[in-house]
Length: 307
Image 1 (cartoon, one colour):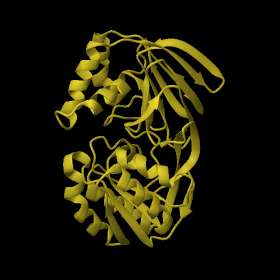
Image 2 (image 1 turned 30 degrees about the vertical axis):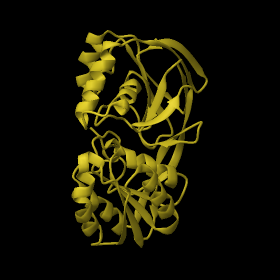
Image 3 (image 1 turned 60 degrees about the vertical axis):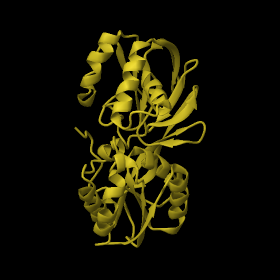
Image 4 (image 1 turned 90 degrees about the vertical axis):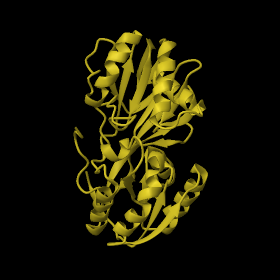
């Protein structure tokens, strides 16, 4: 993967204070202090997704680099402003899932990740990574999904209690109780599939949901998606497969098929899609893998296998 040169200059640190149950707010000052060891830093704290999006759009034009502190949600907001530009993105993970940061090989601890981003700035280098782009113009960094997993997200977002991971646990149990496959139509480049499926995942990166390697064959720099289709399964089978996802234990199961494609269209009636954990809307959705769409600050080459 090619190396581009840049100047540390003035960087914007955009913080999601609510990420990780307030972790973003707790570590923001320390992260800013760490980054100031090697760069001039302007910090912006978004009180809402809309305010953060405004900060990110402005920073893309006014700063030499943009660094986000938070989870995959603020990374998703950042790529909407930075995709296709020359402004590089740095990620300091402080969210619940942090799948984009993990795919890039960044440390889990915020201060360690800040050091890694600072090292990339000091080395005056960045690298290009692919992004997915939907027919509606939305960019995504990790995984677009539809079916069981998007239904869980949809239910969890409607719930007001409890907070954090427990809410998703309850949403999973509720969706398991009404588990069903649905007829999907999936266009993979020039190949058309029509099949019943429990879920379809289109991966630019290998994982979602805090380390679940649903599309483990995905690479961030090969110009293709990895697509995982889980066919009809029982509640027992799904419950048995779920704990194996962090090690991609579902791959090879008779109900699971995998594909590679540069352009994917997914349709099923009365089904929503999510990407990077954010709601895209009703199917159909078409996603195209755009090679090298985003410049990222990383301490080393993107890992070939982030196990």
